[in-house]
Length: 192
Image (cartoon, rainbow, N blue to C red; front, side, top):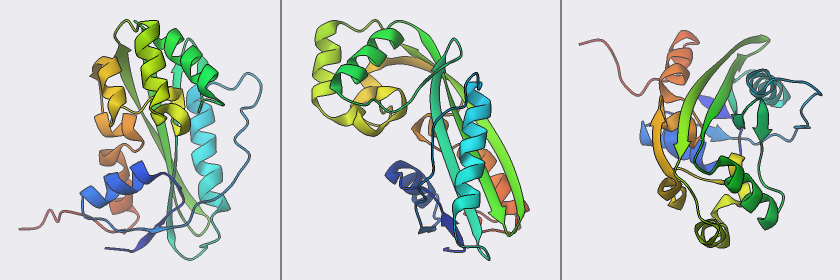
């Protein structure tokens, strides 16, 4: 099923879609991802997803774009700039709850639907040695908040409330529902 474009370079999003039998064409887009001063995390994620969908040159295709942000107390934790930044992020998230919001935008022509999902994630208390060892794996480098729950980062998480795929990078159920509304591919048919 390859009836749509995934406007994302994220291998995690592509893997989630493939796991449910969807095979989008991948066409990553490059946009300015700088937050606007005072922008709330959910508004930022929704804006980024919509801008990515609109930036995709596949005008006649169904285009899916997404953006994931980790946030706590209104502060957005993006991808770490270096190992020191990753260690600082993980230190701030240690022993606390934070939210992971993934917004998605589905565009066909000028019509666009934007949605989002929020998941509450709780980290265990992290020692400096654990943080240092995790950062040394290189896993945090390209992930919002400096961790990947689908990899070794799972060792940092004591629990979640909400959608696990959302934390990985794509809230599958709302995305599949939006694809169905747009006449896109579906991994399962509800007809007998």
